[in-house]
Image (cartoon, rainbow, N blue to C red; front, side, top):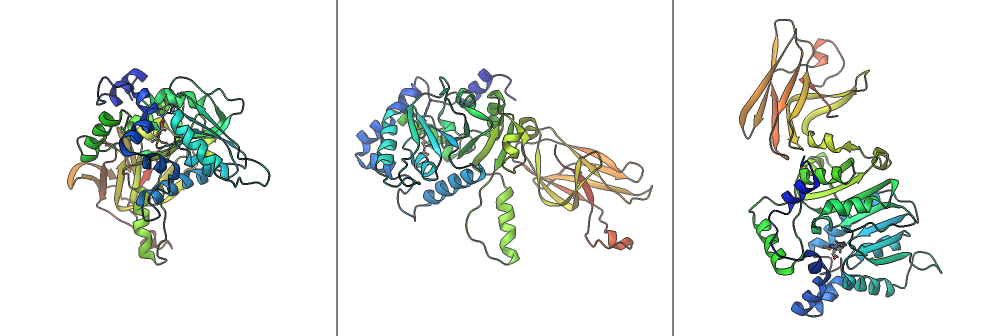
Length: 406
Ligand SMILES: C[S@@+](CC[C@H](N)C(=O)[O-])C[C@H]1O[C@@H](n2cnc3c(N)ncnc32)[C@H](O)[C@@H]1O
C-alpha cells in the first residue's frame, strides 16, 4: 500500500496539469460551460439523467447503476442519505421521491441552484401534504465534515470521488457523519490504461475545464479507503437487462458478473456489520490487496471443522488476481496412492509460469502467484477423479481443492 496519505496523493496527482486551482475550477465549471455552449448547457444539467432521451446509452447506465446501489443499500423509509458532490441534484430528487431525507453538498453554488430549481419545480413529494425532505449545502468536503446532528445510513459518491484532489480527506470527512453501520457507496469509472485514448482525453479535459478527471485503479482505491478508516469493502458489478431463459443465456451473464473492467462500484464501511447488513461479503482492505477470484472451473464450497472453507475444482480453473499480491493459493487433493503424483501448472498468457506437485505422501501445497491486478491466470491439473468411479454416488469430475481467499 502507499504508506502515507502524502504518498498516495503524490501517486494519484502525478499527472495533473500544473498550476491549476482545482477548487475554483469546480466552483466556476457550470458558468464556463454556459459561456462556451450557451443555455443548453444549463438545460442539460436540469434534465440529467434524461439528457438525450431513452436512446441515449448513458441514461440507462447512470440510472441502472444508481438504482442498483440504492437497492443494495437496503435503506429504511426516511433514512438520511448524504449526496456528496450532488451537483445538479438528479440523485437527490430520486432519493427524496423514494421518501428519504437527503443532504446534498457541493462546492458549486451554481450547480446547487440548478438542484434547487429541479426540486422546486417537482410538485409531487412522495407523501400527501408533506414536502420533500432535502437540504442543499455549499460545502467543500475535502476541507471539513458537515457535522450533522443526525447520522447518515448512506453517503453516495455518484461520479464524484475522482474529482477530488484529496479523496482521502473527502472520504474521511464523510465518514465522520456516518452512522456506526452506515456505508459509503461509490459509482464511477475505473482508471483507463496509461497513455490510452481515454487517458489522454481526460488530461485534455482537465486542462480545458480545470476540473479533475482522473479515475483510480483498484489498488489506489483500497489504499484511500484504508487511510480514510473504511476498512471493509465489497466491490460490486451491476448486470441489468433481460436474458433468455435457456441455459445458453446464463454463461455470458456469469462472465459479465465476474470480469474486472472499467467500472468501480463498491460499498465501504468502517465496520463489517455495515456491509454484512446488506447481505454482502465484507472483505477487509488487506483481503482485497492479496485477493483473487476464481472465475471458472471452481465448483462447490465446503466448510472444514475449523470454519475455513475450500472449493472443489475441475482440471482447469481460471483465476483473476484482484490485488497486487503476492497471492498464496492453498491446493490439496485426495485419493493418490503413495507413489502417485498430480501436477498443477500455472498458465499465464498461454505460457507455463510455474507448477506444484501433489503426492500421496504430501497432498497439499502452496502455489505462489504474482502479477498485475486484474490479470487472468489458468491452473491446469493433469489428473481427474470422480467419487462415482470408486462406487460413490457423486458423478462430478473433480481434480483438486482450492482454499477460499480469507
Ligand atoms: C461529475 S459531478 C457529479 C455530480 C452529481 N453527483 C451527478 O451525478 O450529477 C462532480 C461534482 O463534485 C463537485 N465537487 C468537486 N469538488 C468538490 C469538493 N471539494 N467538495 C464538494 N463538492 C465537490 C463538483 O462541483 C461536481 O458537482
